[in-house]
Length: 162
Image (spheres, rainbow, N blue to C red):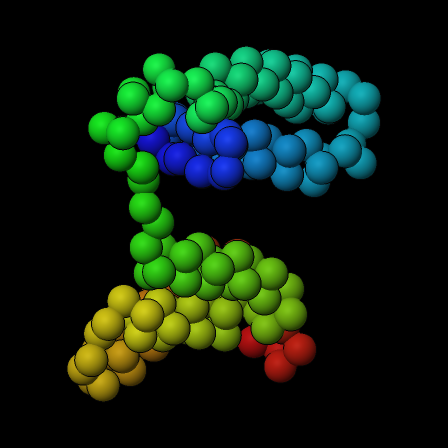
């Protein structure tokens, strides 16, 4: 459970809310990407978005609690409660993932994935320079040859052209 403590209140959020938030974000992005389609083609995305939005709203409402700490009975209950701590590595990894998604259109897939893997490995504490060089380069080459060469699926290219 995530807990956020304030002076007179505490917000408690259950872990299940993360799954619903991810589903809502992906559904919203899918809907936004497909909004230029015809009315008939949008029937399923609209239905999907509406169902997940309604379900998500009620799930989030159920998973989030606001607790008033001024009540003495609540204070006794909260003394044994353990909050969920987010580590520095988790925050760094989340930020790197977000920056990589944004950088896909600017730098292109190849360079974005290479930098993401390299920086993630450094943030996770990989010390071997050989691993820091071979794993990102090998992964990028594998992705490039599978998608670009073998399957003929164009990868996003950046300002450098690859």
